[in-house]
Length: 76
Image (cartoon, rainbow, N blue to C red; front, side, top):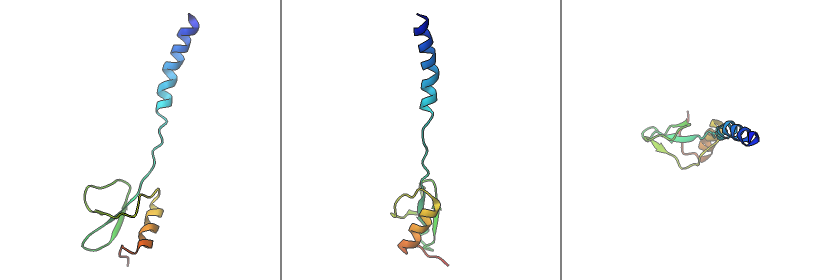
């Protein structure tokens, strides 16, 4: 009986700890200002602006490279 109670106590502690090990991936989007054609890079999908269909990038550097390779954005 003690073993059963001990196993239940261990499970009660271990299960919540395992549930909190979620991996959060960062996502970067390329946003274009319609009037100026300039692009910005954001880590959250915005509700306003034009989200360019260049894909979802893992890092800001990848987003910048993707935007420069697409030749859609205007740079000085």
